[in-house]
Amino acid sequence: MLSLLRRERERRGWSRDYVAAKVEVDVATVGRWERGERVPQPYYRQKLCTLFEKNAQELGLLVDAFEESDDLEMVADHPSAVSKLNNEQRAQRLAASSFSPTPSSRSANSEESAQATASLQTPTATISPETPSLMVGSQEQAGQKHPSRRTLLVGLLGGIVGAGMGSAVSWLVLSRSPVVVPAPKAIMNSTRVLYRGYQAGVHAAVWSPDGRRIASGGALDDAVQMWDATSGQNVVRYHIHSPSVNALAWSPDGKHFVSASGSFLGSGDDHTVQVWDVASRSSIVTYHKHTKEIRAVAWSPDGRYIASAGDDKVVQVWDAASGDTVYTYKEHTFPVYAVAWSPDGERIASAGSDKVVRVWMARTGQQKMTYQHSDFLRAVAWSPDGKYIASSGGFVDMTVQVWDAITGQQVLVYRGHSQGVNTVAWSPDGKYIASGSSDKTAQVWLSASGDRVFTYSEHTLEINEIAWSPQQSLIASASNDGTVRVWKTS
Image 1: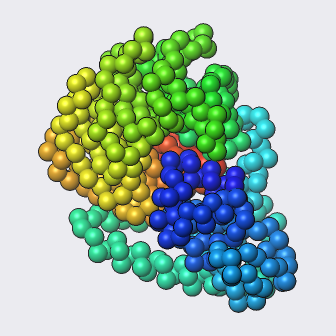
Image 2: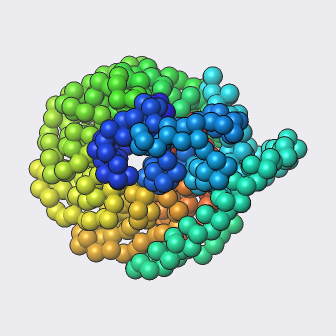
Image 3: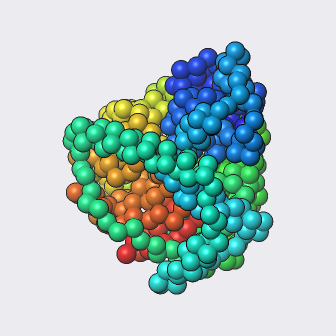
C-alpha cells in the first residue's frame, strides 16, 4: 500500500492534507492507509479511486487474501470499526474496488499488465503489420477460466454500479455548455512500434526534429532512452542524475535535448535540469535553481533558451548554453505542471494546480492574460500559427479547452474523454489535436469543430504524454503501462 498509494499521491505533487480534504477524512487516516495500517472502507475506497482516477488494485487498496478467505478480519478506517465481513460486505467492497463493469475486463487487463511486466527486463520493441493481428485476442479467449460464483456476483454488482455512474456522468456532460459532443467513431488498432523498455510508467516521449528518433524517460529508470522511431531498435541510454525522468524536450536543431529529474516515493531527486549533447552522450549544462521536483521543460524555438517548471511554483527561463537564469516567473500559487513557448518565441504559457493558464512575455515576465479552468491543469499547447492555446487536465471537468491566445475567448470545449486529460498536442498543420487521458485512450479530433476522427485504445493504463511526428503521419504515446507506442492516425 505504501509503494502504490503514496507513490501516486507524490507523483501528482499532492500533500496528505490535500488528499484528506478531498476524501473527507483526517490526515492521520491517510497516513495509516499509506502505511498499510488501515484498509479503507468501500465508501472511502471509491472516493480514493475517483480522486486518483485509478482502480483499487492500481492504488494498492486490496488485500491479496481478500478473495481467498471467507473468515478474513480487516481493520477498517475507524479503530472501533473492526468486524468480520459477511458475504454482502465482501461483495460491496469488491464492487467498489474497480471501475470495470465486468470481471473479464479486469482479468484481461491484469494478464496484459503481467505480460508487459515480464518483458520489461531488457528494452524490446514489436513492429506491427499494416493489418492488426487477431491472434492475441484468440489466445486470451482460449486461456480463460470459468468464473467463480463470487466473481459473477462482483461482475453483476459492478455492472449495476457502472450503469448508474454512466447515467450520472451523461447528465453532467449534457448539462454543461458550451459543449461539443463528438460523433461516435470506430476504435482502431494501428500500432506500428511497441517499445517496452521500462519497469514502471513512462512519463515522457518526444520526437527528434527530423522524425527519425524518439527520446523517452520514466520512473525507476535512471536514463533517457533514445531509439529508432521506425523499428524501436538501436537503443542509446543517457544515464541521468535521479531515479526518474519527468520531462524531455529536443533542441530545434536536434543536436541536444534537455531532461528534468524526478523522484521515486519522494526521494532521490536532485531538483536539476540537464542539457545533453546527443553525439557525445554527455551532459554539458546542469541547471540548479529549482528547489523542488521539476515537472515540465520546453526549448525556445530559436534554441537559445529553456523554460522549466515544477513543484516550487515557479517557471525558470535560462540560457541553454550557459545555464544562466534570464527570468524567474513567480505568479503561480501551486505546482506548475506544464509550460510551452509560443511559435514566435515571444510568449510562454504555463499552467498547473492553481487551475489557471498564464500567458506572459518570456524575457520580462509581463503577464499578458490568464485563462481559468475549473480544475487543476496537466497540459498546455500552442497552435502552430500561435493564434490559439489548448489546455487540459483534471478529473472533474475531463475536457480539453481551446481558446484565443490574445483575447482569452473560449473557442471550443472537447468532452470526448471519460477521465482526466493528461496531455494534448496539435498536429504540425494545425488541423487536428491529439489528447491522452487517464481513461487509457488517445483521441484525435478536428481542432476547428471538435469532431473525433480516431480513437487509439491499446494502452492498459493512463497516458502521460502524446506527441506528433514532424511528418504528421505518426503519433507516439507514453503510458504508465511501461510502454511507448507509435501508431498511425488513419
